[in-house]
Image 1 (tube, rainbow, N blue to C red):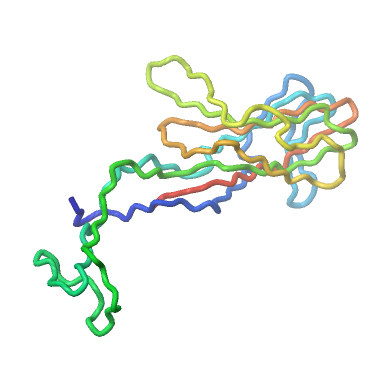
Image 2: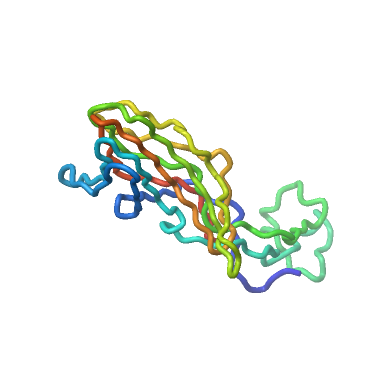
Length: 229
């Protein structure tokens, strides 16, 4: 049935969503060496992994942006539009076209019906990729990898096993020491909307520095699709 009231449900999302996770949005841990918040210069702060450090720096993407779940599908405000060209209007409908003098010579051959939805419209956010902003100082990093994982928590159930959204690996990150900063985009291979409640998505950057090298992470910018309408 057609609806006489309701909100417009947008089919397609926007793919230009961006949010920057700065060092204040990150958590970190190390099994060797140290990772510290450091003021590099005016307006330039970083999490710095010192010499001979083995550590992980992580961002909870789902903590950064508003989320919504799927919205039950339904028809819009009107199902039936127009009448056959050159025939009497449907008595159940008022005329839906333009004024007579503006009508084209070729009209509809039949009335046009909009089918109501039978499935949910996906709402919320979908992480597509992220930019890792960092520098490698003095000596090449021993290893530098990243990954993305998702967990959903449920009442009175065992702690779940994480679902991998991006396998651990270099994924395009470089370990070469340089005075210049790196801003490297890492795409997810199969991104999807978050549609489950109590769900978290973690982006992790794992670093191992040599005895003569450091690693400084400035931020992780998340690039996502969103649909809130």
